[in-house]
Length: 153
Image (cartoon, rainbow, N blue to C red):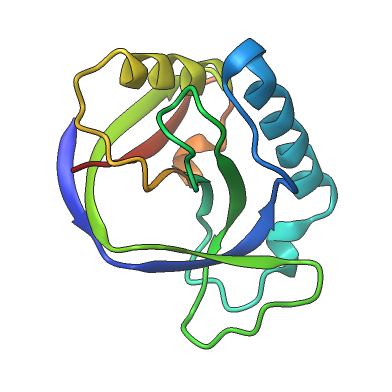
């Protein structure tokens, strides 16, 4: 894992209408459904002013630690001043210190395994905004690579 400083990042995309929770695997269901909605609705194509081809999945607005409710968002970084189209929402990841973990392997199992490792680690988590970055390295679901950034104290 690598510690890094990240600048504020503005995103446009979609989010869960309500918070989800990791208990009883509820977050797996809710997050999976939001990803299906993102793909089926071609939201990637609907986001204007993208700064690249990366998709961010953001865990934020935590009620406590990883076992408490949190919000979830999927979207893309956009240029400053980009208007938010109807049906989409915006989210800004605040600048801060993050610890980077890399998930590798078949999707989506490698993501779950990486998060399990993070939850069991001694990372001094800030529980502000944690996010995954999906790019060309995650296109092959049989051998994906996804960067996960954990907000730290």
